[in-house]
Image (cartoon, rainbow, N blue to C red; front, side, top):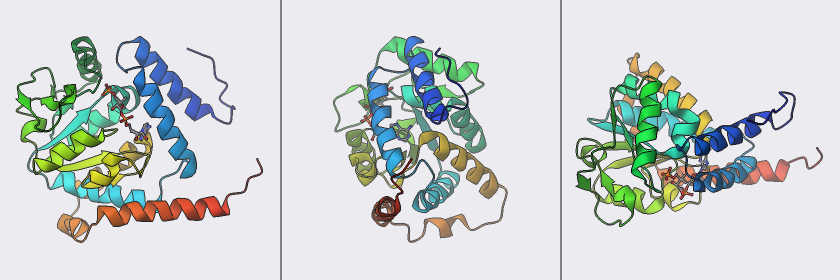
Length: 251
Ligand code: PTJ
């Protein structure tokens, strides 16, 4: 692990990169996960490394959708396990929903290691070892899922997802909530609810919103009514454009 001084202006970002590099070494994250993260970082610059108003609204809708779901399932890949395992576990407990290890660059060993990491950190219900059902319309490893998990879920939280699986899940009649810093990705455009935010910020917000709404008498259906993902993505782009126009280019 590199020693990064806390006063370094990019401390948080450098620590996150180190976490991913360590998790590659531990066999949790794929090497391609670094490339995906780099793409995410570039978009995070454009949104100012903060939660946009439109992303907060999408997160509220996601919280309401998860709380009103009959069978929510939370999908975990190598980047998610490296960066937000604790928040995913807390969300799984709050919702009484299973976590399912579902990875794109699948090896059985990495799937086992991700499951073990989640369980070591306290997860009680982790699926993903029994791949007994197939999502139609995709040919790669992510097509194989657990019949008791993603296959029969009505709402799937699938952060850092790939576009074709997102589309295939939607085609099966499921609601898909994604977290993706790229508002232009196929996943963001296809999902039912796209949270355009960094996974760490988004998961913190999602956990706290689920906690808050779970114990209130608030009308959850009202959050879902009139929600339009396309309009939300347009709002993200508008926020980015306004921000960039006002950007002070001096350091
Ligand atoms: O562990 P595996 O094998 O399942 O692999 C996971 C990755 C992420 C490598 C795999 O799913 C993949 O290749 O994903 P993509 O298609 O590159 O998409 C990842 C998306 O996540 C991109 O659109 C990025 O902008 C976005 N992204 C990356 N890092 C973050 C992020 N979004 C939010 N927060 C991040 N930290």
